[in-house]
Image (cartoon, rainbow, N blue to C red; front, side):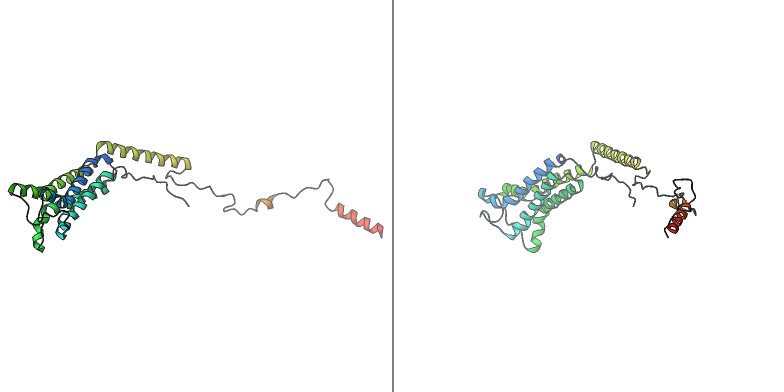
Length: 237
């Protein structure tokens, strides 16, 4: 059974990869922003900086929906950007961080529709502006900017990466051509031994039938030996 030799890597495999350093900085910043967004509602009251009550580590369902869940999305997206070398996976991490940042921005606006909300901001007017920016709107805007920047960097294929992918494609083509020359087939498949065509379509007798019978050791006729035996038996009688 013949098989066509194919390179172990497809031509697009080199383009789908990117250096990990491309999303390292943005991913690290997104992880830090996610930690900030998830912890500030619980530690902010230590400094009279927050929403609702001044009780520290006060867990509510509104804080879960408006702060903890988007913070997890942002931190997870940043972690994916830090460790991933595949473009599709890194882009998924970017979109996940963008979704978390978008929820930070619009969450407090939508929350009153189901009767929820972070509560009243503590302090005076200036502090309240800082609290809104630090907890929700400003945090979400910075998150979206960093995640969108990382997404754009992974969408673009650099010149160095394109050259590396072209070199890998050329090496794979050369390897397939070398395999084809070694097997004696132009398509790179496995060469099969030529079948024996000596007797195909021939009516001649097989080789063992065409061989001449062994000759007698002496030049006497074949029946001489039998005649001598008959005379010897006759004399004994």
